[in-house]
Image 1 (cartoon, rainbow, N blue to C red):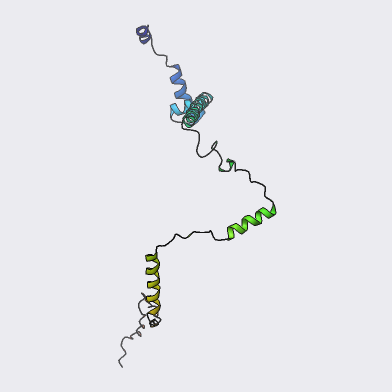
Image 2 (tube, rainbow, N blue to C red):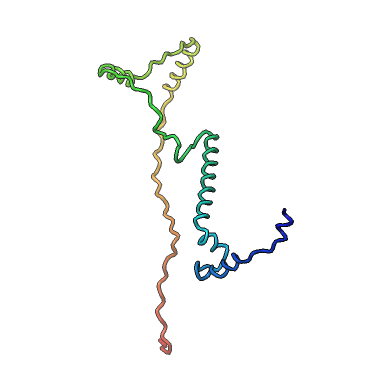
Length: 165
């Protein structure tokens, strides 16, 4: 069957029609583009719609497999998370809670050994017995001004030719 198909002569009527009408009817010199856009425009639009639908479907399947969209359309909103319900408190309980927050936390001191207490007392005593030396006040230093601009020179007086002083 294939050999018989190859032996039949080629019909050139369509080729001649598109070559003759592509410039006057469609105003295009590229015959392939004219056929796809002008003569078969609706068919090409349908093919583009099918390819786009397939692409969007594949993207949706990939996003579903990856756990859903993280950003963009369809992504969960950040404010969508439910906050736990607040318990209703009376005014007196609120004041008591506020007072508790204002107080410093109670910290229990660890018991010290007698040797540690004596050592601490000795350090305090020696610190109190040393005379304090007044430190010299530092002189206020002036910030240095650094100028990168060059000083301007005075323009020279114009020299008149032929005049001798």
